[in-house]
Each structure stands twice: as C-alpha cells, then as structure tokens.
Length: 444
Image 1 (cartoon, helix red, strand yellow):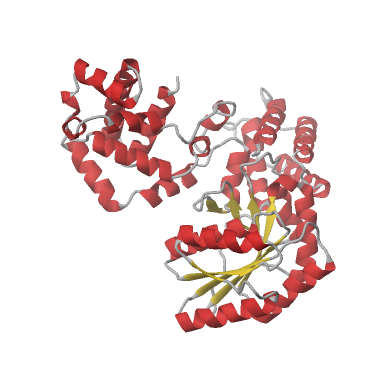
Image 2 (cartoon, helix red, strand yellow):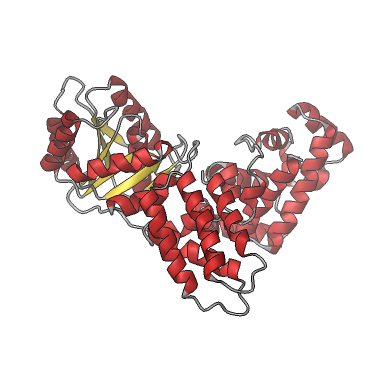
C-alpha cells in the first residue's frame, strides 16, 4: 500500500529542491501538490486541508538551519504531522477484567473472523494469556467453521452453540464458561452485514451492554478507502468503540483510511493486518507508518520481527560457531527457516530504507528459498557439517538430486561463503541481512 502516495509526495518535495530557503511562494506550490496527493489517496478532503494548513504554518514559522535544505525540512515537518494525524504514538488494548472481554465488530467481509484468530494468537504468544474465541456470528454458518479452523491453527479453544440463534446469550454463556475454566481472555467474534442497518447496530449494542467488554474493536477493510472512514463514524456513534483495526493492507489500497480515520472518529488505530497467516498482525505505530509513507522504511519493525524469532540462546550459539569458523549448512538452513517465519519477504525488504521503492515492481515469492533448501537437502550429513568437502563431483550430484543445475549449486556455495563472512562481521541481525541479500542475488 501507499506506493502511489509515496511517489506523489516525493515529487511534491522536489519543488523545493535547489531552493535556498523556504518562502510562502514555494511552500504554497509544494502544499498544493501534497494536498492533491492526499486526496488522490482517498484521504478525507477536510482532513487533507487541515493537514496542509498545519504544515504551512509550521514550515513558514520554522528556522531552517544552514546545514538543512528546505526540502529536507519540509519532509521532516510532513513526517511529524503525518504521525500526529494518525495518532502520534501506539495505543495498547485493555485487558482488564476476569476474564478480559474483547468485542469485535464490523461489516461482513471486513476480516473480523480472521483478525479474531490473529489477535488470539498474539495475546497467547506475546502476553502468555489463555484465550477463548467465541463464535457469535449466528447468521453465517461458515463463520463458525472458520473460527474453529483458526482456533485449531493457533491452539486456542473455540466456544460455539451451533443450535442457538441468540448472540447475546452465546456471549454471556461463553464468559461463564471461561470463568469455570480459568481462561483470562475472551474474544467475541460477532456478525456483520453488507451495510450498516438498524438490526445490526441494535444487536451489537445489546451484546456490548451484556458482556461489558474491556475493549471494543472496530474492524474495517482498508481497501474500501473513504467509505471505511464513513462506516467507522456510524459505528462509533452507536457503539463508542475503543479502537480501529485496518485489515487487508496487502491489497490494492490507496491508504486514505489509515491516514483519515483517527482524525474523523477520534479513536486510535490499534492494529494493522495483512495476509491470511496468523502471525500477520502488527501493532499500529503512527511514527513508523509515516516513515513508510515517505519511503523511509521501517527498520524498527524489522528488528522487532527478527528479535521475535532469534532468542538469546540461538544468538549465542551462532556467535560461537562463527567465531570458531564452524558455521555450516545445517546452521544456514536454520537461519533460512527463521527468516521465513518473519513474514512476507517483499514486505520485509520494503522495511529497509531505500529498498522498498527499488523492489516495487519486482516479484518476490515466499518460495524464494525453496531451491536453496532443496540443494541443502540433497547434501549428505557430512557435507552439510563440513562444506569444504563439496568438490566438483559432489556439486554435480547435489544438482542432480535437487533438480537444479551445476551453476545453481556453485552460486549457492558462493552465497553461503558471502553470508558467512557478513554474519561473522555483524552477528545477529547481520545474519538476516546476509540471507536477504543472498536471496536477492540468487534471483538475478
């Protein structure tokens, strides 16, 4: 997402390129382009105008240092104001209560059920809490089965009453069940409609009144653009929810909802979701999103994802092997597995400053390591433990066994040596960087 907006904002800053100072004339021209870029991205018009007015006031009132060019100063002001517009800082969810109850609301097709599964997985793994998922959508039979499948995937129990058509009673009974089982977190997935209607709003309002949730989250499909913001406003007027979840950020979305929604409903964006994998859920950080919109990458999120996969013991063991120069293909394969767990490869690479734009039109499959894994799998245990054994004849055998070619095996050997050198000089995150770079070279 945001690719078009990023391009247009970059072009708008070029108006100030080569200018000696910020003036009312060149600022006006730049802001005209910024406002147009925001509106094209489906940002609410009033929000776009207020935003550019604020940027103008900050820009004309700024003391530009001689070491800072006007374009750089404008970029910083826009970045700071974008972050402020989207909420400023990340907002956590409340898990008060025994059990804590999280109510999920939204239109049909917005991704509520999938998000419920992802949230359960995150609360279980990152907070160490027991979670009960509640199938409160009594109108869509597939919703109950979908939630059961998701619950099984993430190792969380799912409460259902297949014969009941009373969502309020189901939610209340689920909370009683959680108390008897000592489960401290209950996530209630509710029914949606194709559009906002009175019956839907009355039902979700009744469920909220009955279960008194510590957190009510409104799930919205980011691909619906400004309509998402309007729907959020209608839900908030009736439900007074605590936060917003934007789903399908990996789809063809212009990003206007992410930028506008906080300003319009005055409720924080708490999570962003992309893809179907149960770990594809992120806490929403306005500052990091502003950086991504302006093409600055998101190194902090990349590091956090890496830290989730690399524990201290793994890092210590890797350091030891690198120092002793005994890092082998078994370790290399383990590193690949950890990188794959971090998520979509193209998304990961886009978090590196300057790389996202270069990879925009490049297809990077999640199977990018499949060929490498096949070649490593064709090696004997002795060859994996001692790569120096792999001579010309062994390389030919590995190529035949993995369905690849001799040049492919030669390239793997070269990449392995390069990655080992990189990791030796920068253990830890260097291993991730080395593998990512090796993977990109392998596609050339």
